[in-house]
Image (tube, one colour):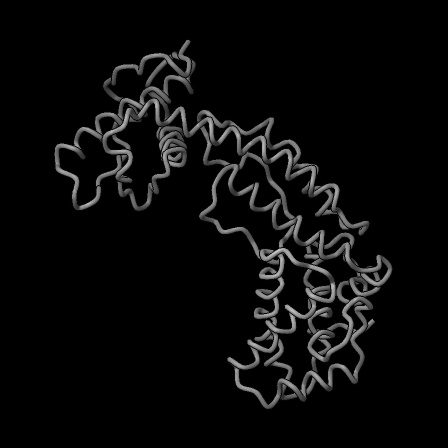
Amino acid sequence: MADECGPAPSEEPGSAVSPVPLPGRASELASPEDVAAFQSRFLRLLEHRTAIYTMGDSSSVPKHVAVDILRSVCFVLGIDPEDPTIPDELLSVDLDAEFRRRLADIERRVELTGTLWQQANASMPQLPNISLHDTMATIGDFPRVYDVRSMAHDVPISFDYQLCHPVSEEQLGVDYINEYLRHVIIENDFLGRFELNSCKRLLSASSPDYEGLLINLYEPVAANAIGLALVGKDPHPLKVSDADRDEIVRRLGALGHVARQRVLRDAAAGACDSLGISDATAREYLADWAAELLPRIEIGLPRQELRGVFVAF
């Protein structure tokens, strides 16, 4: 049986590993000999990881598995398989040792997943949204089912709660999950700064079946908080009146697109000040949502109708 320190198997004819493209471009300072030597070390590493995946039975695997092992190795080493520039620091290192070092770092990031998951659960709002609660339960299984040794790039769970700001698809494996949890923590912390019944009434007015629908809970609450801050009011009550919407139309109607965006981001900052949010990432998260509201606002401004943006309840 192969282990983390075992030798790489020799290449076999017909192996699905060897035809998989290897990184082929390095920095302009790298010589062809450096690149060739790296490719040789990379192939040996790939063969070694394949043997570990097959528990030493074979170095030949189906093509789709070989591609996944390749992507996993690239993820661990910090190589983009779609744009395989060889990082300079990998050209002359012991690639097996470097892989093990970076794999250990990923394992530490998996430990962080547990911490973030606990924080996200501790901050969960008492709002009965099925997809949020089911998603958090599913993510709790991630450290157990994540194959860090052979499929480190993969997210081996399915979940459906929609974030206000989705995690970039460029994030892979444990990095995707950890970033997702950071977003959830920001959103949960924000929702927890409002009276529960106010949130429930607003969400019911925004989406009557908010408990069962695949919706984001943060968005309507954040929109009303921004709207109230824009007209100089305390965002805590979350109630945006017809007079408030008229005032928003008046304030934004005479401005151009860039000025409107600036005013909305300033309103988000004002809402954060009123709510006691000092974390820079959380403040930027709300400011980005304010900017995303602008296209919807600009559709409603000519009709002086912003009920679809700032919900009445």
